[in-house]
Amino acid sequence: MDNKDFSFKDNNIIIPGGAGDLGQEVTVNFLKRGANVTVIGTNKDKWDNLYNSVPVYKDQLHWIQADLATENGIEKVKKYMLEQDHIDILINFSGINLRNPILKTTFYEWDQVLNVNLKAPYFLSQYAARKMLQQGRGKIIHIGSLSSTLGLPNMGPYGASKGAIAQVTKSMAVEWAPVIQVNAVAPGYFRTSMTNELFEDEVRKSEILNRIPSKRTGNPDDLVGAILFLCSDAANYITGQMLCVDGGWTIN
Image 1 (cartoon, rainbow, N blue to C red):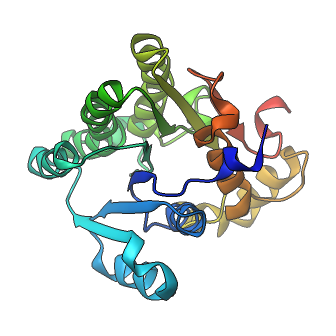
Image 2: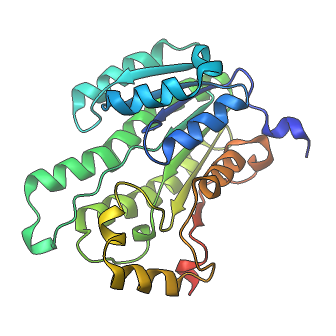
Image 3: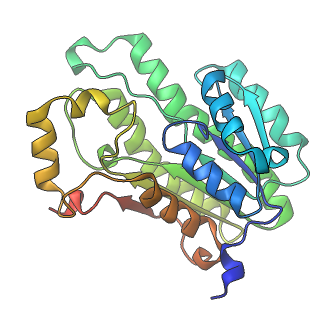
């Protein structure tokens, strides 16, 4: 293994959700390592914050405003992807969760969560894979969850989407080997806008921390390291796996 294994100079990387709470940390780290990164999202304020925070790397950073809950949004990204000379890495970071008991889940909630968390990653991976198979190499990273393998309350659609992501990761890895490595990262408990409400409940917060052997929630760097590794040449013999970045929560 060589230091060049962790260089991403001139790589074209596409990151749906790359301006979000955790996604932006991943985006910045790839920029620092020489990559050209295209971020996909709907929130212009988040994009502006990201863009203005990295003045040195502005020429390497691009944005597509697209709503991945809609077919029009997915088609917009498809057009962009198929126009690229090459796509080296796709990281499907976009995700939403609408917390509600299963008995109260609506069609709208189900469709929104499954469209963003499953349909979009599935088809964006399909489009990226067409390029990667032609060019002879590529990496795809999905974002799983603790709920990919565990049942958690008030998260029916979210759990369904993330459970499916775990399986889709394996299916894509088998179909596209040996050219493309497809893996997933399953974050544990990180402080984000998606989990703020959860951590405001002191009882639940205490229960979570007591179960984590590392005795803390995750920091963005914890997730960045795992993703950089799986995207690097050091992980060329790893495919179809889901790496839990959870401080040991799932084993306790």
